[in-house]
Length: 119
Image 1 (spheres, one colour):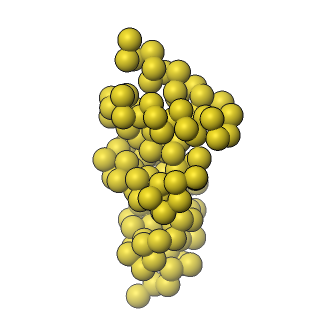
Image 2 (tube, helix red, strand yellow):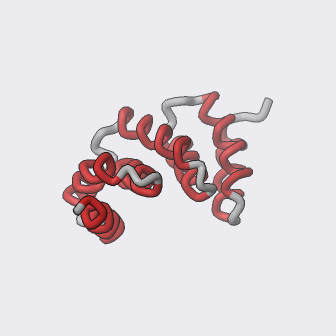
Image 3 (cartoon, helix red, strand yellow):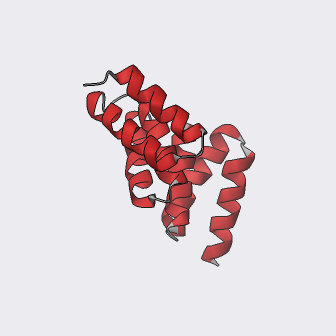
């Protein structure tokens, strides 16, 4: 069995190298070893999002938000995963909170896009 640090590092490298599907396999194994590791779950959510496994990205981002409701990046990830699935009404509160917490252009832009799709 491979240790958590090795699985995490392999996953991170594959994701950054443009192979998010392979990254997700390593990161899912790492998440099994430590299901409360925010670093692992963040990388896993990103890998799922980047490989268009949007339901998995949503579920992983929800886990992150449950672990730390003040994690603006997790809120942004959750909002973006919901928006990509055309769940704009569900995405808006998460993106609104993330934008208010950070003032980030990414969250603000995603929020504006979701809100425009609601009207």
